[in-house]
Image: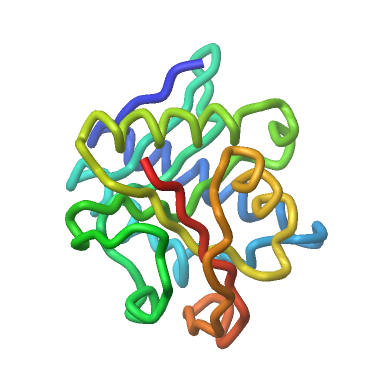
Length: 173
């Protein structure tokens, strides 16, 4: 498997990847409640690629995973008692990690997470943080297995979920 930045010429491929993954998640337990066009949006995915924030995992030439890494976070993150104090530019925030349902439980999510942590270390970051929908149990387990600590549970509002409880996790580098 290869973890790398998505290239601008792959924008349509990445959008199609998320579209198919979201379609395949409908009706599954623990679905993240994403809606293409709401979250993630085609514009948002394309912008993340242009800014060098969207990474992909490819296996045998096929896209099997993706994630957005940047420093943007919900304002509620400022209310969390994080294990380490850091300025926003010293923290990598993980967004929209996706592994297609047929490829789940094959180690791709763990491979993604390990490469996210490696990349954040290379960039001299102090921590990696994220939030995950309270009803999305498999990703919560994956983050805990990878060494992330649950720091808070907050009611957040996102366009695709409406107000909902999210668990906020942190990995101190």
